Amino acid sequence: MLREIFTRQRQFINYFFETLEMDRAELVLNEFLACQGMIVFTGVGKSGIIADKLAKTMMSTGTRAYHLPPMDAVHGDIGMLTDKDLVVLISKSGLSEEVITIAKLMKKRGIRTIAWVSTRTSPLASLCDFVMYLPIEREICPFDLAPTTSTAVQLIFGDVLSVALMQAKKFSIDQYALNHPAGGIGKMIADRVEDVMSKGDELPLCKKDHLLREVLVELSEKRCGCLLIVDDENRLEGIFTDGDLRRALAQKGEAVLSYRLSDLLTKGGFTVTPQTLVLDALRLMEGEKKVMMLPVIEHGKIVGLIHMHHILSKGIVLHSPQEIV
Image (tube, rainbow, N blue to C red; front, top):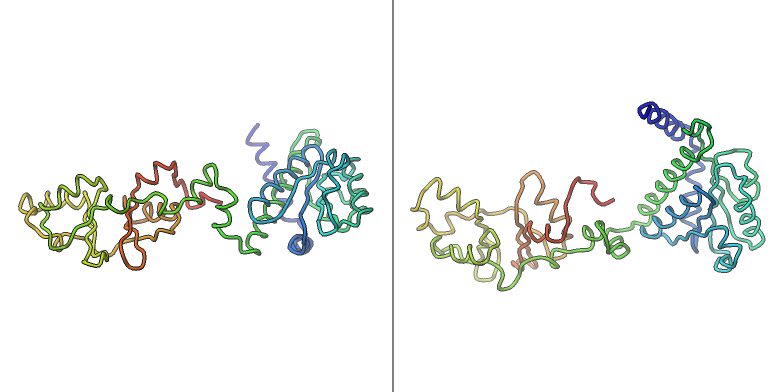
């Protein structure tokens, strides 16, 4: 049964994509971009829930938006609106008395309106300045009544517009971080490397002419999993890790303890800056060449070290390249 219902819903969603009037969709985007005030979403029932979700998505992604329930609107909240705002009325049939009342009130106040409907003969359409028809073949509900497919396409259309607005406005991840500092998303995009890295006396620094046996204490006590080999001006010359130590001992035995770090260090490799997002540092670590730590460089000099443990302690885990958005 589930497989059959999923198949029907996929067919109905495909129908929406195949028959959507893209030229009119572009006009809706242009209306949103031209809005000098707030984009206000309203609707009743399930469409009202979609209106609330879309307003919140746009708010967090750089567009001034607001959800105005019809009942609140007619009990005073309509007073917050101005003629610079744009009101989007979402309704499958466009027959709901509440949204029709709102449309009439907006017309009296000279506030521009857009109707999102799935019925071409909708009464709401004749009351609004612009109509966006969101085509559906039918609901997956066996009675073709419960809002299921219709609310799905409302959400899809609104989310696509939200992303289009982000791109058109060049909304940055830094701005997103300011708007969304909490939760899993906040952890991934608000923290910078400088917020979690080891620095100062915590850094396991040594010079390339040191013998390995002379720096084993530093490697052990600093508990960073590596040694950072620097020159007299604190410029990074290479790195020597716990893994390098194990491999060197396995290949050369105890004799390796008399080697200088210049013969053992690894040059090159990834580095980050203090301003790098922790999420981007994690992506480097979990890339094709997996590493557990990254030197932090600023103005050509070593200023810190970020370790996988720092990131995990913040509760940040990268499950896929699409983790953020």
